[in-house]
Image (cartoon, rainbow, N blue to C red):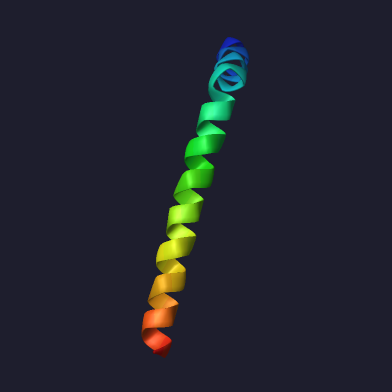
Length: 42
């Protein structure tokens, strides 16, 4: 149970940074995917 509380505390401290990295990674992935689809169509 202590591990869960420790993980939650860590998540609240660095949750914003994780969200920014996740959003950036998702944006880059979406751009690459769109570029690949356009490359296939053209």
